[in-house]
Image (cartoon, rainbow, N blue to C red; front, side):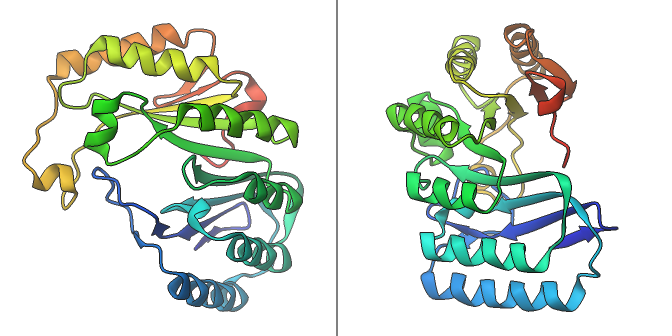
Length: 246
């Protein structure tokens, strides 16, 4: 947990149902008893260290926060609601994976005031997904996005990873076209970094040529020209959808 002068708060949930091959964040496989203990310690840490200043942005990241059960998710959000003071105009974000989020979990998020969701999609290409150790059900992606709008969580980000080994410009365009087809407000795009101690790095993979990486970046900029490219990796449909926590 990091609380910076009462302005922003980041809560880390280091549990995942699967471990992505590129990820070097602090994480471990989901175990119900470990999550329960972690939430208890989180509650104690906030009580001991939080000085009561008003928070403008609250961001729950991971790991995969949506890997928690409905009961655990509600306990987490209840802890934050009871312990942390939010300003009247605040941004409350949670990271989710499409394979672990459910309508019931989204209802809980809405009930506790979450108003922004950042979904890890990364790619819809089958070869890319195998390399990243991820799965994507396109039909579920669409249903989850539709349900978010149904319950009026309309500020939605999608993450994209590009510049993967053997990836082509055509594959990048296909990924971007799919993301654009969704009713979302924000897109974050990341060129693959082979971090130390990740499965991809250990396996000996190397990055693509810099010129091709640059062409992919230029393609993404072109395809998202109707978005506001306000940071290197971030695109927002309108001014009000720029990530305040970033």
